Amino acid sequence: MYLEKKQECIVYGMDIILTNYQDNIVQADAHHIPFTDETFDGVFAGEIIEHLENPAQFLREVERVLKRGGA
Image (cartoon, rainbow, N blue to C red):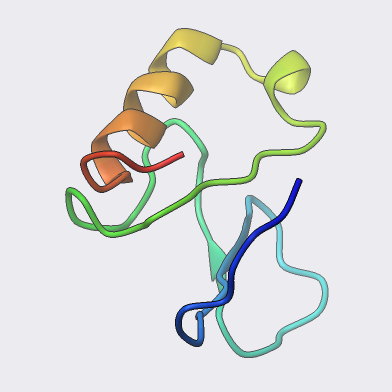
């Protein structure tokens, strides 16, 4: 897939337990993502959903923090 670079991006990480404090890493529960509605253009959630107690709640949170047309 070809992605045209149109602007710089800021990447955030999130984990329930922080073991390595770095810039843009947030400690949070995936069921309650601590960002306002429509914050992100995209969300990548690798190897997480199978570990969640309530995957549907997580997906609602992802939908909430994604901007309209986000992926």
